[in-house]
Length: 241
Length: 338
Ligand SMILES: Nc1ncnc2c1ncn2[C@@H]1O[C@H](COP(=O)(O)OP(=O)(O)OP(=O)(O)O)[C@@H](O)[C@H]1O
Ligand SMILES: [Mg+2]
Image (cartoon, rainbow over all chains, first blue to last red; front, side):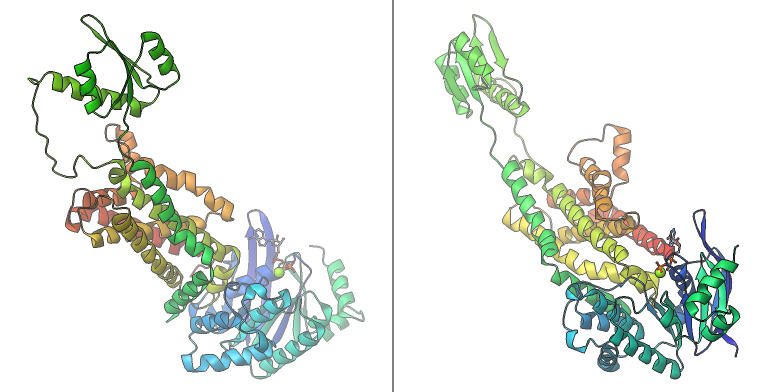
């Protein structure tokens, strides 16, 4: 399979600190790809580079054979930031309709799409509340709903399930799998091992390096350990750059 | 359609924020009213102590609205010290002696005015002058005089605060970055934002102009629409400057730090004080938008000029806004190159 997303020797420095070091990635179309790494390892930075919100110090990102950033591709990407970027004075509904208009969803379809995504994140009953009165987990779900609105070909989700209870978390993962079956490519960052296990392919990130890459099973097998957690620790030990 | 969505969202947000609406619409009126109360007072009427002053002279002084009290030299000295009188006039054999209290320049010049008028009447052969006014009249008081500058200043000030802080909030709560992860172009964001806010700014300009002209009855010779256009242009300049500077502030507190640096100095250089004689001071005024707004407002309100007479000022205000808007679009490059 030819790759849908290609990162070519990406490097990112802030002042004199280099936080992404020479990262190469190739993600095929339709894959559920996980970026696994501890806090501060550079997941958010890498994701922002992929979507074009950060201009890497070195290297290039290509999506669907086009160089990023590209406004045309922005239309095809759904993005959920790590911190909820929503308008707290507005109701959930107003937020959703706003983003629906920004993504150019025709007026007639907006209502239907808003209802569909609200159902996925289980917020249908709370659409008329202003977000000031939302709990942390509800805001997380709203952010996910916004990312799903325009049925993007590529979903980039930065820690989507933080603060969400296990029942809803399982149901969201089910929905992600369903979207994947329909052909959506999904990139998820996480530091939770049991979520990482659900991905087709993983890149393990540590201090800005990709220390290992492959499917969860491959990674466990290659490291000769029993679990992903042990594998992660094992790779961390053997990679002294 | 995307710009319209931004405008709609800003209107929705703003309507929920009752306090900011109040600050934008009511606060300027409150401050204008207070200034009007202070500056629109009748002329100060001085109190003068007199010693040995002839009856006829005393009558003349009283005709000039001065309060006259006869005192001995010692009493007068004490009264001056206690600020009970503003001046002490003593009639000696062939000489008149005047002692001023002197610490209050308004009182001092009022005493001088009274004495000037009186001496003119004592000596009817002195120059008989008829004074005519090309613009304004003797009734033009301090409020009428600085009113146009104040209107400009308050429009600028309140738009700067509210516009700057709300754009800053877009940055700090991450929604600006979120918008840049959509297919929105940078100029669409800036134009949408300025237009959404523009609606409220236009309302504010109308409210302030109507209130000053029709309620406070500020001196006004020109056309209301011309005043409105200038205040609106000034407000757009303030808004685009505020959104630009918000890129260089990390929080609201840092945004407010721009006020003493960027806003307050403008009022000193915009025509309340006469600074034409000092070249470099005048040059500083030339780089400040309020200078042009205030100048145009004075031309229209006091001198009754048409818009065509202030095209230069209008051009410069439009120029300022365009430059600030372009810089805004460029500043967003720090988030997304495209
Ligand atoms: N704008 C910035 N300026 C300076 N340093 C930054 C900036 N953004 C990120 N960093 C640094 O880059 C490193 C990686 O940060 P990043 O947010 O990508 O981590 P992360 O893997 O997403 O962590 P977490 O799981 O806690 O979200 C950190 O050391 C952080 O301090
Ligand atoms: Mg992160």
